[in-house]
Image 1 (cartoon, rainbow, N blue to C red):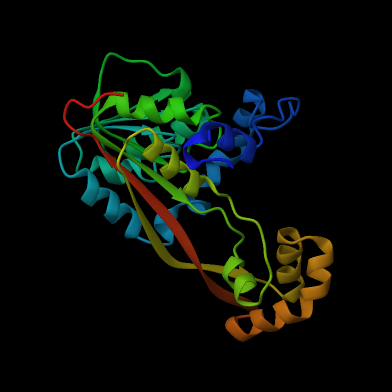
Image 2 (cartoon, rainbow, N blue to C red):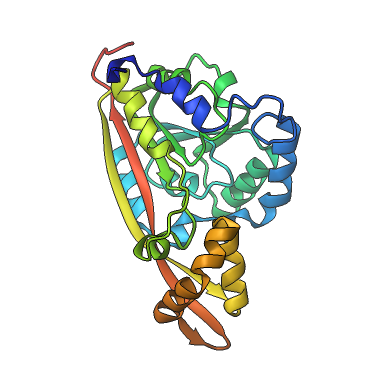
Length: 282
């Protein structure tokens, strides 16, 4: 019988998130050029379309409470600066690290427009990052999806931070996940938010986990639009068998105004925080 202490959670991470499919060279996970091209296309509209702060202020407020004032921060995967610019308001200095120069260019435009002077940026991967400096805190918001050796990445966060680090993960579930669950329809979700605390605890790091749930609103033109999204979420046979029930559940929750459906569904973001003990090294 396999003992819990015998489980290699780093290997589980690699298997769960497809890192053993190294032949898939078109996948952004393995192909830096494909990843770069993806962000070049998305960068101009990312801030408007994929900003968690448009859905809730809970995450930004939680970060502010955990970080405190006048701290030095390294943000891994800062992107276009959705959280960087907010943290800059109460931090001493922020270094924003991101793989995509296109996203960093958007951050720089926003920084200049807001007259913020305590942010500097650097293009690159966390795995390759080196510096003689250390930071009070390291922050990562939805940015670890391309890291194969997650154990080394976490230990590196610990090594470069004097007070601790914070990992923010929005649970990757279909928009209709709650509706599916209530109607007995199973669907996949990304389990990184479960694996990360297990890895940290195994490493001897005292990770605290907090779940923030808030409404996410979405608009649909018609029921065909709804069906298209549900079909993309579910296996074809399951969708065919459950379509009538799911659409009935949808119309029972949604409002139809101005020629379109509006519905809110719960969304959950996980805050994983580690406070470093003084002098503790692994």
